[in-house]
Structures are given as structure tokens and as C-alpha cells.
Amino acid sequence: MKASKSIIFTIVYILLISISLVTSDSALDNFLQCLPKHSNASKPITDAIYTLNNSSFQSVLESSANNLRFLTASTPKPMAIIAALDESHIQATIICAKHYGFQIRTRSGGHDHEGLSYVSYVPFIILDLFNLRSIQIDLKSETAWVQTGATIGELYYRIAERSQVHGFPAGVCPTVGVGGHVSGGGYGPLMRKYGLTIDNVIDVQLIDVNGRILNRESMGEDVFWAINGGGGASFGVILSWKIILVRVPTKVTVFQVAMTLEQGATDIFYEWQQVAHKLPTDLFIRATPVGVTTSGNMTVQVAFIGQFLGQNQKLFQVMNASFPELGLKQSDCMEMSWIQSTVFWAGYKNGTPPEVLLNRTQNKFFYKVKSDYVKHTIPKTGLETLWKWMMKTADRNFLEMSPYGGRMAEISESETPFPHRAGNLYKIEYGVYWTKGSIQATKHYVKWSRRLHAAMAPYVSSSPREAFLNYRDLDIGSNGSNCTDFEVAEVYGAKYFKGNFLRLTRVKAMVDPHNFFKNEQSIPPFPSQN
Ligand SMILES: Cc1cc2nc3c(=O)[nH]c(=O)nc-3n(C[C@H](O)[C@H](O)[C@H](O)COP(=O)(O)OP(=O)(O)OC[C@H]3O[C@@H](n4cnc5c(N)ncnc54)[C@H](O)[C@@H]3O)c2cc1C
Ligand SMILES: *[C@@H]1O[C@H](CO)[C@@H](O)[C@H](O)[C@H]1NC(C)=O
Ligand SMILES: *[C@@H]1O[C@H](CO)[C@@H](O)[C@H](O)[C@H]1NC(C)=O
Ligand SMILES: *[C@@H]1O[C@H](CO)[C@@H](O)[C@H](O)[C@H]1NC(C)=O
Ligand SMILES: *[C@@H]1O[C@H](CO)[C@@H](O)[C@H](O)[C@H]1NC(C)=O
Ligand SMILES: *[C@@H]1O[C@H](CO)[C@@H](O)[C@H](O)[C@H]1NC(C)=O
Ligand SMILES: *[C@@H]1O[C@H](CO)[C@@H](O)[C@H](O)[C@H]1NC(C)=O
Ligand SMILES: *[C@@H]1O[C@H](CO)[C@@H](O)[C@H](O)[C@H]1NC(C)=O
Ligand SMILES: *[C@@H]1O[C@H](CO)[C@@H](O)[C@H](O)[C@H]1NC(C)=O
Image (tube, rainbow, N blue to C red; front, side):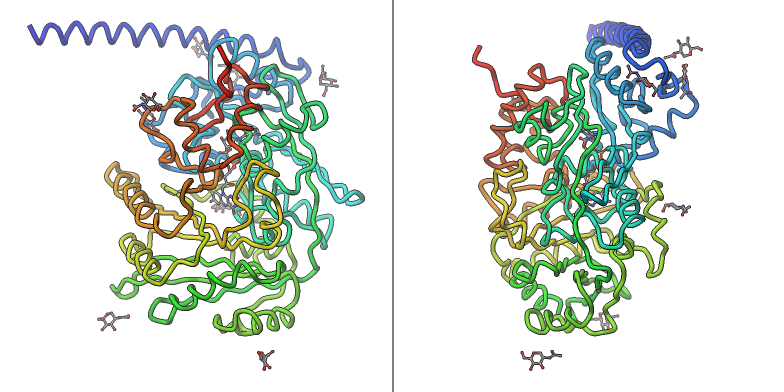
């Protein structure tokens, strides 16, 4: 009785699966046939289409997928990848995907920590932007137009090619794409002087759910506000940003000083917490603790990595006056051009030519990341707790503490959707990576990351416990279902955006009322009255 029931179930199940495969197969055919009708005939879209039939499908899929956790055999695959060669290919992809019921995942640099730009659990198409990456620098107006398929490394390189006294405030990993990076906030060593990337964006081109190309003027200030920090993926496809280039001196100074707990790291870190956010804005000192094993003994090593927008001598005066405890020595410091400092921050050996910034090949690991905001100095007992957790995954974790203050504290919480401004001493990134992706290893490290996050609760922001959108974390506000129910969204919305969340949902209701642009942590439309 029981056996025959389960056989019937199995048969019905197989039937259902084959029906859905047939449906999505013909839907895919229809989708593919729809594309040329909506794109510019002089730029054949067939050159941009990759399906399972194309031998290069897998390599295109993998090329910029950064987190190996989402490159496994069981990770759901897109029905097709459209690697747009022309803006009309984006328009066609949106119109046809909407018509034939596919979700779109837009991918720029593929660094989303949870793989949201290349993984979905419903039938989906990847709209890949790597072919659209022109960068036009205009030194006269000190601005640039950057297409979102560009990486920040390419952007830095193109700026420096034209000017030794201009730079741009963005992140440290050169292969990060400007599509996700900018729309999610974007920060780096120039943050205390010039703010976030979004604080330096002045115009944009966005393709909306109807395939229209909008700029700042035609989209209006609400939409422009929303996509600069609220994540682009909820509102459309960003084609390009217009940014302000910032001034940098011809020589900057960088340094790195590292010490273990045995060498007094706790005291110096404790001091760093109190001064880093108050230092002159030309100086950015990040603390990066890692758990390490040395000759079988576990400890934590804290490296203080700094950048000063000026020369050695002045840096020493500042350090002597504000942070002598670090014991910075002449031999720790290197003067170099700003572009060379971006190579330094990317972790390359001193003297590596800046052309490495153009290398789009990514270094890949399995990883999990979380974030926190610190508003009060963490007491030494709290630091002991942190160090203890870090030793449990020694040689596998990476933490970055990035000081706020300066320009960050001058901008109001509602100026952009990114709300983490005045009142923050620093932000924590907790990262853990591994190289063998067994289910057990993944479970082990993800669990460690959740337990560490729980252990840090007494020492960090609360109500809401804030988090950084660009450090995407699906543990936040998720209760196991993958739909973006409004109540679930209110939970992650408060953490990522605080009071700006509701305004984001109203903008969403205006530009994408049927919620076509959707992912596990997108902005849902503000519920309509009926
Ligand atoms: C190794 C590493 C280092 C990092 N360092 C920094 C750092 O120093 N500073 C910092 O601020 N962040 C940093 N990040 C985080 C990074 O900024 C975010 O992961 C960012 O979202 C990545 O952008 P992307 O275009 O590469 O990612 P993607 O995965 O392509 O996109 C991320 C999200 O944005 C959406 N999206 C992408 N392009 C578009 C577009 N054109 N229009 C609409 N939506 C779009 C995607 O759909 C997805 O939801 C780092 C991440 C990694 C993995
Ligand atoms: C199509 O592309 C060609 C070549 O780039 C361009 O000249 C033309 O204006 C485009 N047509 C439309 C309708 O965008
Ligand atoms: C992929 O294959 C399809 C046919 O299956 C073809 O139309 C398309 O041009 C191919 N794409 C590329 C980029 O070669
Ligand atoms: C893939 O190739 C098969 C056989 O050549 C063909 O029948 C099918 O239509 C192709 N599918 C797509 C999506 O191009
Ligand atoms: C490791 O710890 C042992 C015991 O505390 C100590 O004797 C030894 O010197 C340590 N080794 C290193 C390299 O610190
Ligand atoms: C450091 O500051 C002290 C006073 O705070 C001063 O006496 C000393 O000369 C300074 N040293 C350097 C190298 O500037
Ligand atoms: C580009 O980067 C990858 C990954 O780090 C590396 O393996 C490769 O050698 C680099 N290519 C060049 C031309 O430098
Ligand atoms: C998740 O939360 C939403 C809203 O709070 C609820 O509707 C849904 O049933 C929950 N799902 C699960 C699996 O708990
Ligand atoms: C939700 O997504 C996760 C991966 O993030 C997946 O493992 C799970 O099966 C999905 N659940 C549902 C109900 O679709």
C-alpha cells in the first residue's frame, strides 16, 4: 500500500518535472526568438547569447562568479547568459524576460558575497555586462563616465593614465565591478577624506523595467537617490555612472605594521579604536586582525595598514601627535603615486606595475562574510572574546576594521540610502574562507561565522544591528523562505538602510510596481492600499 503510493507520487513528480522542463524549454526558445526583435539589428544579439548549447557557456558563467560556494554542480544554472554588446541588448533582455516569465540577474563584477548576480532558485537569465566597460575621462570638468561592466581596477588605471593628481574613492579589490560596488555604497582608503563612492556620483544612465533609458533628470531625484546606495538590482539595470574625480597629491605614503597578541596587539588595537576615527582626514589606518598558527601555537596578528595623502615627514608629525603607541618607523613607510598605492592595497608586491589592475582574472575561494558597526570602544574583555573565536579558524579568517569619521560623519543618514554615518567608530568585516568545498567544510565555516557574529552582539550596534549592503549576508532577515515578503524585507531593510528603507520601497513602487527586478534581498514595492 505504502510502496505503491510512493511509486504513484514518484510518477506524478517526474511528470510534473518534465512538464515544467518542456514549458521552460519552449519559453526559452520564445525568449531567444524575442531578443532580436527588440535589439539594434546592426549589433546582432546572437553574438551575445550563451545557452547550454554553446561550448563557452560554462566558462562565461564561471568567469566572474567570485564565490566558489556558488560554483558547484548543484548550484542552479541560468537558462541563458546575455553578455550585452550594446545597450539595446539590455533593453531586449528586460522586455523579453518579462514577457516570457524569466527573472533577470544583472552581473557586473560578480563579487556579490552571496552570488545573487549569478544564482537564482527560479528560472533565470544572467544579464552580463562585462563587454560594456568603456571609461571616458574628462579632466577639464574633473568627471568621468564609466560603464558598469568596468572593474574598479580598470577605472583607477584609466584615471592615472590621464592624471597624476586625480583619483577616485572606491574599494581595494581591483576586480570588483562598478555596477554592484557603486550602487551598494562603495568605500576604500579615501573614505575619510571624500566619503563613499556614491558621495561622488553626479549622473547615471539606468534602463528601467520598460526598457527606457533614463538619466538623472528624466528619472527624477527619488530614483537617483535610491540607486546610489540602495542597490541597483531592485530598480533596473545601470548602464553607466558619471563620477567626480577627486584630487590626490603626486606622492602618498603607505605603511603596514603588524604585531601578535604576544607583542602587545590588544593594547594597540584598543588605542586604535579611540583614535582612528578622529585622525586628520588625510590619514586612513585600517586594522586587519587574522588568526594565525605559528609553530603549532595559535595567536592573532593585527596588521595596521595605512595611507596618508602626503609625504613621509608630515605623516610622522601626525602619528607622533595622535598615535605614537603604534611606533611607526621610517622603514615601515613607502612614498608612491596614488595609482601605485591602489596596487599596494590590492596586496601586490612593492613595485608591481599598475597594469595588474587591468587583469580581470579573479582569485577565488569559498567564503562567507558578515559585517558590524561599532559605536563604542570594545572593552578588552570583548577583544579577548573576538581573539578566542578567531583562533578557532586560524589561518582561515580575515577581518577588516575600517575607521569612519571625517567626511563620513558630515553626511546625514538620509542623504543617501546608506545610513551608517556619524556616530560610528569603525566598521567590521568578518570573513572566513576555505579551499575545499565539501558540504562539511561549508557547514563548519558558515556556522563559525554565525556564532562569532552572535558572540559579538554585546559590543556592536543594536536596534537595528546594522549591516553593510555590499557585504551581502543572506542570514540577515531571512527565515528560510526565499521570497521577499515585505515583513522579511523590513528586517534586512532596517539593518542595511535604517530609516531609509520605507523611502526605498516607495521609489520601488513607482519604478517597478510589479517587482520584476527581484532577488532574495531586494527592495519590495511599498504595499498598495488594495
Ligand atoms: C574580494 C572582495 C573585495 C571587496 N572589497 C570591497 C571594498 O574594498 N569596498 C567595498 O565597498 N566593497 C568591497 N567588496 C564588496 C563589493 O563592493 C560588493 O560585493 C559589490 O556589490 C560587488 O560588485 P560587483 O559588480 O563586482 O558584483 P555583482 O555580483 O556583479 O553585483 C552585486 C549586486 O549588484 C547588482 N548589480 C551589478 N551590476 C548592476 C547593474 N549594472 N545594474 C543594476 N544592478 C547591478 C547585482 O545584480 C547584485 O545584486 C569586496 C568584495 C569582494 C568579493
Ligand atoms: C544601431 O546601431 C548603429 C551602429 O552603432 C547606430 O548608428 C544606430 O543609431 C543604432 N540604432 C538605434 C535605433 O539605436
Ligand atoms: C550560441 O549558440 C546559439 C545557437 O544555439 C547561437 O545562435 C549563438 O550565436 C551562439 N553564441 C555565441 C556567442 O556564439
Ligand atoms: C540546442 O541545440 C539543439 C540541437 O542542435 C536544438 O534542437 C536546440 O533548439 C538548441 N537550443 C537552443 C536554446 O539553441
Ligand atoms: C609555543 O608555546 C609553547 C608553550 O607555551 C612555548 O614553549 C613555545 O615557545 C611557543 N612557540 C612559539 C613559536 O611561540
Ligand atoms: C613627538 O612629540 C613630542 C611631544 O609630544 C616631541 O617632544 C617630539 O620632539 C616629537 N618627535 C618628533 C619626531 O616629532
Ligand atoms: C591575472 O591574474 C591571475 C589571477 O591572479 C593570474 O593567475 C594571471 O597570471 C594574471 N595574468 C597576468 C597576465 O598577469
Ligand atoms: C517567513 O516569514 C514570512 C513573513 O514573516 C512568512 O510569511 C513565511 O511563512 C515565513 N517562512 C518560513 C519558512 O518560516
Ligand atoms: C532557498 O535558497 C537556498 C540557497 O540560498 C536553497 O538551498 C533552498 O533550497 C531554497 N529554498 C526554497 C524553498 O526554495
